[in-house]
Length: 184
Image 1 (cartoon, helix red, strand yellow):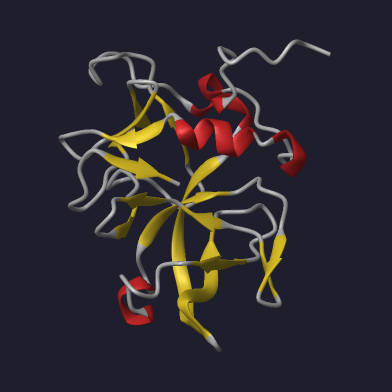
Image 2: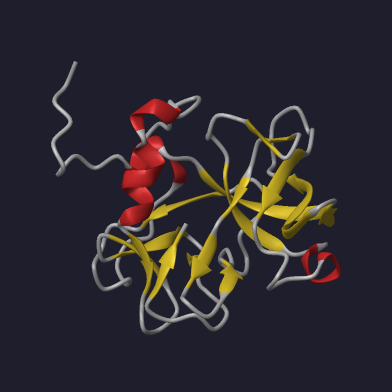
């Protein structure tokens, strides 16, 4: 196979999509976790289940109906007995955890990816420029761990990957108030 040098850009292997939260509730006996379902625009129309460690920062009521950015090709994994097949992207600082917002006009199911130009101006790319994602990211390969280490929220609240704005033709993904934050 190809050498996996640190410089390899693995972002195209990652499938991030705009999604809408349909249901949310606390996970019994897990005071930091919420579970629920999201519509990721999958072809079969079926919602996906998520488990997210955001209960201290977001209530289920605040979550339902919200548009979020979801990692769609992680291997589904059981968390506290619930099989999670979608991961909600969050901005994290030592003080807070916030859900990353997709571009305002972004449709459910629409992919978000790095937009090519450092300035965030310039040509916003169509889906087909984003690269073909893996069907399922192999957890042993730690692709998401490496990609997320290079994702951040800049001083203006925009999500960037290696300095390049992440979004789609509608604009940038952003954090409501977190700045200079990690994204995971």
